[in-house]
Amino acid sequence: MIAAKKGCVRVRITFHGATRQVTGSAHLLEIGKHRVLLDCGLHDHDRVDPNSLNREFLFDPRTLDAVILSHAHNDHIGRLPRLVRQGFKGNIYATHATGDITGVMLRDSARIQKNEWAYAQATQHCLTDPLFELIDVEHVVDQIRRIDYKVPTEILPGLSMTYHDAGHILGSAMVELKFKEGERDRKFVFTGDLGRRNMGLLPDPTILTGMDVLISESTYGGKVLEPYDVLLKRLHAILARAHRKRGRVIIPAFSLGRTQRLIYCLQELFYRFRVKPMPIFVDSPLSTRLTDIHRDFPDAYTPEARRLMDRDEEYFGSRYVEVCQTPEDSRRLNYHSGPMIVIASSGMCDAGRVRHHLLHAVKEEENAVVIVSYQAEGTLGRKLVDGQRDIKILDRDVQVRCPVYVLDGFSGHADAEDLAWWYEQTGGGIETAFLVHGEPESMEAIAPTLQKFVKNPVIMPEYGSIHEV
Ligand SMILES: [Zn+2]
View (cartoon, protein in one colour):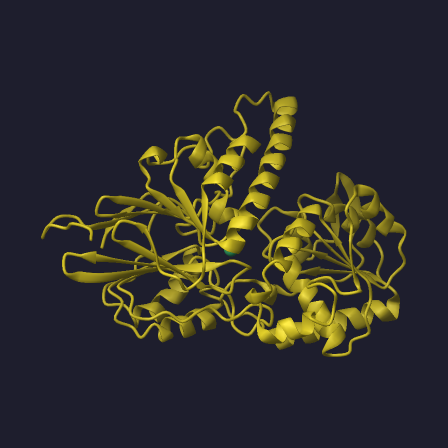
């Protein structure tokens, strides 16, 4: 039991990221003597910038007792090696899949940083070091402790943690913390990133009730996304056009989550809806490693998804899916005739092999680009979404002659209706709620909905702000 004298500060939350924006998730909980960090994500800042928020923490990492991860997207785990390098030696809790994915994601991040740093050194005389190196990642991996879903675990004396499936990506979890404050039982819930309902592959987010404090994401708090069956129909029409014109369909996609969701969705079209199949090339070494991990967790998927994927020898690997391991495999696709689909990273088209595929495809009217992810301002993907016809790809001027389709319903994030549904299921009576991981307009749009279930005014914290609850 955590000692608490009447009148003294008992529980404190400090927000170190994902405040009124969507990156750098990190929230420090001080519960009695315990200091626990929820997530340790990378801010979307230039990693070689000496003033980047990613370089320093506003607290001393050596004073933390534990880190609890919600899932393995970089904006939730990307600063872990930095934390360990600066002296954090405690346990890093994760679900089994998140534990496995974290190592793969951080090693890839270390590799990218090494390259970015070398480039910055050569061109800008950059004096800062990379944020972290491979050795720091290996320390992180050593400190990870894997926890099953739904099993309460005493992670520190008197502090019990339970993971619940969030349905966002493989391994994603909501974090439930229970402890005593004097004679009073208290329950905290952190949503991490919440998934969408009825998306086929992963289960709906778990319903949780009776919490005192809630920290909720709000990425799409102001938007209603297209339902899954509409997305399938639109994708079906795009494939039919590709068959007719013998064209290529280029889908830029993040390696973790979006790529596997797309493969499943295409399998569903081929098997369940009898759409005429065409080859699917997955061109990203990182996606290949992550898809392997997806095969290790068959229980993570809905019964319908398992039945469908059971038709093939392995999950996410139907006879129509081919992976490109080497750059030569990738280049060979330029000479492959359509119809065909290429799924490649990066999701925003500003790095990775997808740029080469776009360079070759956008000039021809019979091809198509399908955008399935959020495209940040200034990225090549955003230019395509905005309908720009004269663009630069890999320093070459190119005219876009093929159609660009935007299917943003493939997002792994709950939309405004999903969030409203989840809040309603809590049963209300929440004392204090915080909105994080959303742009201000998304938070403001969803706050009145959440407010119906919360006693005190819903808080949209600022970076570094401290709240006693
Ligand atoms: Zn996420």
